[in-house]
Length: 313
Image (cartoon, rainbow, N blue to C red; front, side):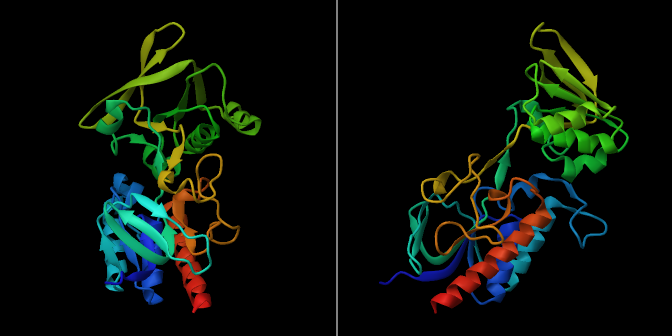
């Protein structure tokens, strides 16, 4: 029995994956989407989304993902609640790409990778306990909720410096916890931090615990790693800014990645180094990392895939 060769398979189910599915389905590519272990992606861990156009009263992350999925399914996208565990891509124009979900082999003429990136956390139990109640890994997503309040930013690189200066415009005070005695950030970002009066930097300090009531953050427990002295800081929000890890491990041997593991795409497109393989969303974007930009690149990927398939015909 001859195996079915699909026109388009989408790996991942965040805003980029579902938007790609909507556009691919409307282009009659009959896409099949594999959600992975976290259907809906990072947004399902975000309670309120207030910055996505079209929702004047805001919406929860999980509800938005359900809406996007329904829209994709309305145009006959087939959604599989399975994880793609292996990939073998063809290097040839018009070649057939192979993917596996467990033991199931999937053949496709085009593949859109939208597996996203995972925020790195410190690994404290309290981070999970207070997730959605004051612990966040995205200042531009959640900073608005801390207007006029005090917050902590953990990290020493450009991401941490950027998050701190962004939050300083909204909040009363930002305390930066830097594990070593120096920043890892660029000189320009360090100057921005130093020239922002309501940012206090605590070098040689680490976050070791979080306290609060009703799953809402009230205090950060920190340690001075030189003196071993512990102290508590009264805050409402704790932003972990130690970077993201793109979910590219299973593609790493075949697709061109940058030094941080993000998929490289041809500028102005979603094309990778392999014909018929496209990448959208946070898996190839370490700069913007927003739901709206991910959705936009999902649209681009579907259009790029449609064009690629049309040229093969």
